[in-house]
Amino acid sequence: MLFSLLMLLLRGCGISQTGNNTKGDDAVKQKETSEKIKIETVKTASFSMHCFKFGHGKKTLVILPGLSVQSVMGSADAIAEAYGELTDDFTIYVFDQRKELPNIYTVSDMAKDTAEAFEAAGLDKVNIFGASLGGMTAMEIAIMHPKLVEKLILGSTTARITETEYQTMGNWVELAKEKDVNALYLAFGEAVYPPDVFAQLRELLLETAKTITEEDLDRFVILAQSMKNFDITQDLEKISCPVLAIGDRTDHVLGAEASKLMEEYLNGRSDFELYMYDGYGHAVYDTAPDFKERMVQFLLQDAKD
Image (cartoon, rainbow, N blue to C red; front, side, top):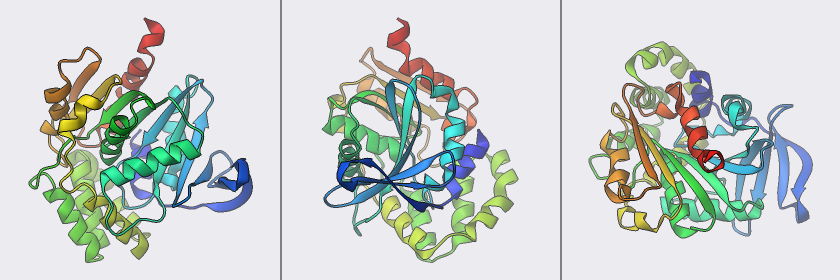
């Protein structure tokens, strides 16, 4: 599972045109990264967005990844392998952020665009798993489009980022602006991983930093700044679907209180659950060995009852 997280965080796009279409009028043009997983480009009137899908289940699960220095689309095969145990019950979609980023872009903007991409891709009644920034986006989507989201899983995320909590991300932004990719990757890895894991990955992080482009850094800055002053606490009650929030007490990016913040606003609901790990870090959604088992149990709970 650690390998899949590495691919998620470190690899960039390696996509080539295939010319196949999955929706009428060329709305979705397929590209591919490998023989197994094809990358699709969902097009709307104002932007385009990469995504890929795998699995053959009747239910739909959308994964919204967190902030990364490079796009996760180059990791399609690794992600599909990591979530293989869900593929019998779910058809799983992984969405990137939009390709054409404006200079100022908020989480709310991200949610609007992602929901529009869902519609363009023909998705309706989806379950969403959002990690970190992806979790913030997922909550915004559930608030804006309550009938769209059936269940919500939130990994290492928060409903509010204070100025103090933004300091870690602010440091990443400054390193990216300075084009100091080595320092950026080390700071990013040290914050995301548990100390023993970071020590093992240090050299790999530095090696991967050599692949970063200026475009990657510019996009990273915009996406990292999208979280500044993020606060949807007063709108959390508008989320009408069941919610599972999972965090870790040793989260050095958002802090242990981030996941507990949702409990403060949603704890009175019978369809809300919070589970806190200890020692797996911000990347608990990949480093905790039973994380995906918890996902499956929550997503299929009604079917078993």
